[in-house]
Length: 263
Length: 274
Image 1: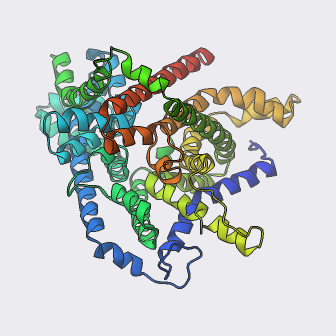
Image 2 (image 1 turned 30 degrees about the horizontal axis):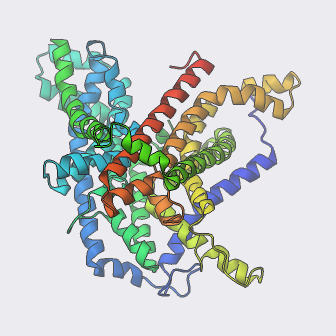
Image 3 (image 1 turned 135 degrees about the vertical axis):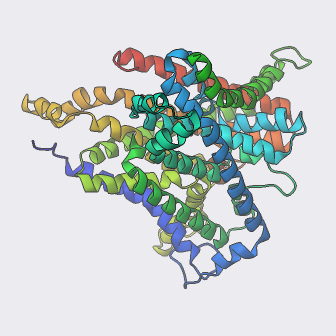
């Protein structure tokens, strides 16, 4: 069968779109290694001093650690409660009300800014809860739908009769979970972990409300720095975040194949 | 027993969303009706302020522009990607996923370097002698739109590639062998089959733009205030929480209304879809 022929104009347009998509990121990369004290592209002289500068600046070091902590904890909690929920939705679908799966989509529907503000106003402020706790709760809620969706997708192709066989042969529930179910959805769990982690690390809209004395996340610190200074430090932090993305994509490619993300 | 097991497993996630999302957001919205001036006083205040009406209209205009441009660009690109040979398709999808996994702050920052006073566009134009003074491109509606299109095109491509891949080549060839010109095939075969995907993409992009914060803050600043930046300013700079809550409530209502309306339209257009 002959594939559909594409008009050269369509191909030309697509090339331009991909230049548009990748170009700005190349520009950040170039600016980050410039020797100048101001942001410029193409770089004037090569230097890695702006990368050193990140680690010299206390604010960046501190917020980087906060972001990593928040991302690890909220991803872990989201997996801990998201995996059972996804399992229940697939295994016990007929015993659960139909609206429940839509209910888990709510965090996508409600604007992130509104969630962030509401957590500040009605959780952190009213109950005097520490901002860090509200921040982790917010991030966990934000990433929960991704976790449930990705795990559900991998459970959809799981044959639950294997699990029943294990149970009928006398395997206790937890052992069945770790030896039968988990190995079968392993790649889904890894993908969910990565998507959740990267979403949390990059979040602005919830974190912007959870900053206080001594507490801020890396993207918020970046925003604040950009509004005051215009030096290549921000470019080098951006490059570090892009390297993180590259690492993440490599793991996704190994476990699921990146085309998975297009589904 | 089975029902009990299902609920037990689903309850931690259900409780978290109930207590961490539904209750706080409901409380925020509820509080807007309990002000001394009467239940709708804060909304009257919002809509009687010319500035706030302008912000609302500007946010809608920007979101619509971003949605329309991202739809057009994303649709054409996704069509070419969906017809690309296997290896090239993977490369293109990776090139679209990469920006998507890179944070909003980083991607908006790129446009500060490009559109800034000493940015690439200005320095190139000045070096070429086309302009003598740098162009003011930042803090305009245009720069916010460009940066947001940049943000959402990859999302649109990924949403549409899957849909367009599902249209068999035979169908397109049947159409052309029956004498349809490429444009007619496009409009009468490909486009109608892609409508559900286009609607999903449009909803994601519109609601995403409508409620965005970082991009308008960086590229628009005070001059191009939108609902998100205005809400943040009211909450965290002027500490007018009633006004911030009102903006939050308006954003929730508009977002949910758009999602419901578009889902309804999608169902009507395609009764086969869920």
